[in-house]
Length: 117
Length: 114
View 1 (cartoon, rainbow over the protein chains, first blue to last red):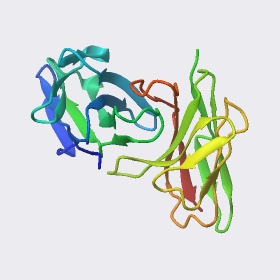
View 2: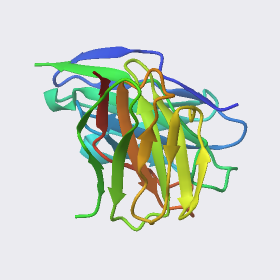
View 3: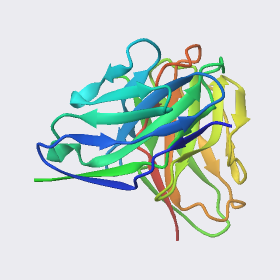
View 4: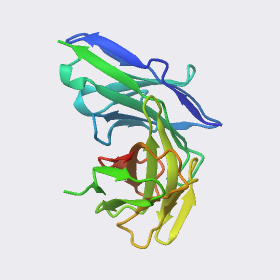
């Protein structure tokens, strides 16, 4: 069975410091991995994805994520946090052995990122 | 601009009443989805549709119904059988043929019980 874990409900970081939001996954095959961000009373916005190739993926708003197959992790990172980065972040996984784009995408429970000035 | 429009933004349901949430997309996507979001939980899939006139149950379909008569539209009805409907409902769409493509989300409908 597929699963995604975001072990931290909340992450607090000072503005200008680096940030990491953790994500680990479990799938039967090789995964497609995604990060989304959600601002209050809004839908999810796509940040970045890992399909294949370079383990370091760069995305929107200066975010990046590192795929680590041995640790089954896909942590979201940013070198210098902004107050405007404060939001809810979701990791998601889909087993690439499933052809259909529907279903089988599993979302983590979310991590609230709070950046203090 | 292309995107997904959900309406209304806020909705209140009376006891025993069915309510319908609207979702329209102009992205020319084949696949559409409905998710429920509760505080402290991730998104849970209610229903999804890969093509017009076809849809499948997700993980929590009981008490909900959908239709897909047009490619652009995927309305969700919350029936009186759904005893705990208070939640934030999100509609999403994606290109059907490419499972590595991200889903695009609307801005949600917040449903509450009167």
